[in-house]
Length: 333
Ligand SMILES: [Fe+2]
Image 1 (tube, helix red, strand yellow):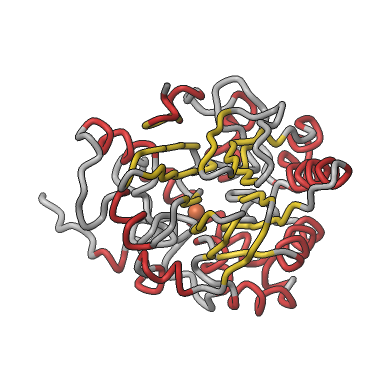
Image 2 (spheres, helix red, strand yellow; image 1 turned 60 degrees about the horizontal axis):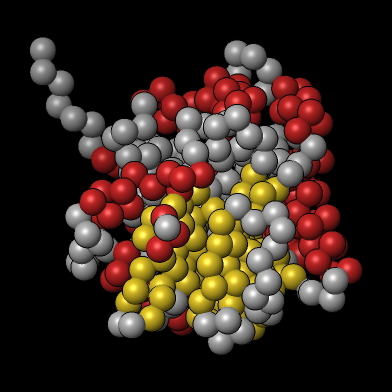
């Protein structure tokens, strides 16, 4: 028997809710945060050990006279179903600049019709989608207990606009069209690279041109990607930090965040980076307490649980992905 495809509206976790959408030009309409040093933190996923490691990185920079602004670009929550962990992450997000990820939007929504809101593409297995939909429902229970934070989650903007030195920086969770968009995922970027980075209505080139940003920062797709191309004679950069709270490369145990700084000296710990108009842009490792995080994760998500089935392998061994795979355009040199 041939089964009719399920309507998009009835495929939670696969579709992109209407309120996720915006246009690249909307990024420039947001108020500007002027900063000299910024960490863009996407995909913390409730890893409070990673949050502590980022705070230590910031304290280390402060000791050297650099005041770093923390910018959370979505999915700060995910594994933090323990109320104390959820409150810890929420307090950090509230204390700094932040925009929404799909997790924040779905937690703030009164019903769970969009599932996890991930808008997973077809290459992601259906079992992963179903588990993610159940994880968000479990996290929603914790969010209801910690309801004092829900108003803050609802108030988060979809995009952010920074100026670091003289450089225009747009911050999104997904891509320049949707907070759960996958156009800045390494799989999509690989296709664009193979096609010679064509211009087009939803291309990376269009994202830079229509937004007016020289640097775009994203996350959501959960694997890092860095692109540097020439655009009108100037460098333009995309930094997808992957995940701040999960390993991003094979056989590693660190998260990744994006550091943007008017200090042009390369950080000793930089994974890869570039300089645009005297502003240094780097992918930085977040070397969190791995044993402590594993113990906390297993307390909340033991073997047999949905998050354990989907993520424990990655937490233990990293994804099947390496640093060279994250580099596109000039970063590939
Ligand atoms: Fe996301």
